[in-house]
Structures are given as structure tokens and as C-alpha cells.
Image 1 (cartoon, each protein chain N blue to C red):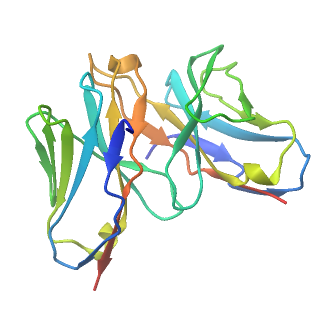
Image 2: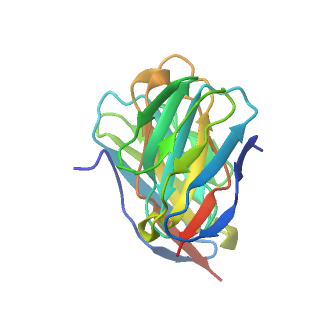
Length: 111
Length: 116
């Protein structure tokens, strides 16, 4: 079983749709959680960190469920520009530990 | 924007040549990483460093080598390039964490290598 698992998609949605991505992780000692966004043929960039209490940034909401060891990302009112691959990233070992990347979920928003 | 730079951005080279991919960051980060990524595929960690004179191999075996003589510089070298080395190589550095929470990872724009 991989340490971080994501549904690879692709998710094909119309503009304005709400879409949710889930990610599960296997290491219960994990302490750091992130969503990164990677556009086609570009480098990954941090979209948002995920906090225990859940957090929101505009149309994006991230939630963490430690008991079930999963992280979610909700995108409301999808835009064409949201089309990208969304990477779930989990860290353990404290600030010295490494980050583990999921394979990513591809989102395609259509007009 | 992150201050991490990779050169060259694109390189097409013949089999057997030695190549060095450069990576520099001006953020003073101790931790630096090299990832390999084929088009449409996942990232694979091939090397990392926690500071000067510290280098470790990552999860994916790679014939490349790295060095860390200065904090800001983390070059990757292939002694004899082969077509199987064709890929995108992404360098990253990580900011300081807080307590148990690790810092953000900043990526360079990548070096796209094609070996003929």
C-alpha cells in the first residue's frame, strides 16, 4: 500500500461545478498536510496547507480527518483556470522529516 | 515567488555525454531536493540534502549524483547520459518548519532533459 493515495481521475466537470478530492495516508504519525497544484509541464506550487480544524481560502476548502487518515479538498464554483493536477502531500518526522507526494488527481474544467 | 532557479531549462544531448543540472536558491534553506517526473506521471524523489556536505539517495534509484558544497547550490550530475535518463528534473528547497509541522516546499521551474 502506498503511503499517500489519491484517485487519479481525471475529473471532468463543467464550469461552476463543485468538486471534491480525497486523499488517504497510511502513517498515523503524520503531522503535516498540504495540497499542491501542478499545471501541465510546470512545477508544483503550494495551494494550501491543511490544518486540523479545517481551513478555507476563497473557493477552496481543505479538511483533515485524523481518525480516518484522510484529507479532502473541495473546490466550489469551478473555473476553467482550476484545470490542473492536484497533489496531496503528507509529512512525518517533524520539521526534519520528508514530504510524501501522492500521484495527483487531474481536474479538467470545461466551458 | 520562490527564489529557486534551475539551469538549463531544456537540454538535448547525445548518449554518453556528461551533464550537470544546476539548482540554486537564495532563501538560505538547509533542505534541498531533486525529483524526477515523466510527463503525466508522479514525482519521484531521487536525492536530498539537509545541509552542506550532507546528501542522501531518495526513494527512486538514480544513476545521477549530487553535491552540496554551499548552502545555496545543489547540482545534479549524470556522468554518462542515456536515453533512459530522458525526463524532467525538478529541484526544490524547503523552508523551516514549526515544531512538528514541516515547512513549505518551493520548486524550481525544472530542467527538461532529452538524451538522444
